[in-house]
Image 1 (cartoon, rainbow, N blue to C red):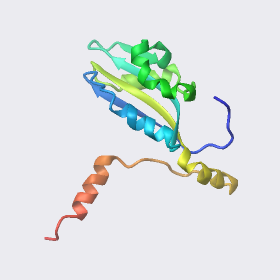
Image 2: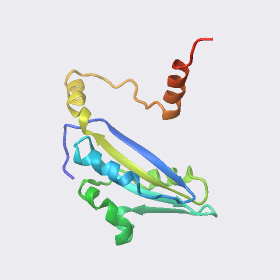
Image 3: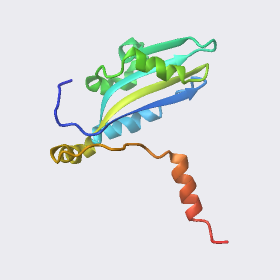
Length: 147
């Protein structure tokens, strides 16, 4: 991966799968975002915690060929942004007998805006995401008839 002075916002998520029930439905949707140029995958790793609390960390290259195959389209984009400490912290947050995917991506759609903010000497003061459940609750309340 080449170093690029122009970067959009970088985000990460840890998506847990209780009971290790990863079914792969997210892979095509992620692939669509990459193909459309909406995001660029910068790193991807997997963690798990077994029933006795032991932690296993797996980078893409650690997976068996059949397990890694769905991620082949992302292979050239993946770098080493996540370190072992990051992945241990992610795994420690899991319930026993669970696994998680840890994903880092660049929001390509926002790159031009981010570049303009940097050129204007803008300083990031806050950055967060609003949880889906919170948005749904507000929208549901807004659609309630007045009492």
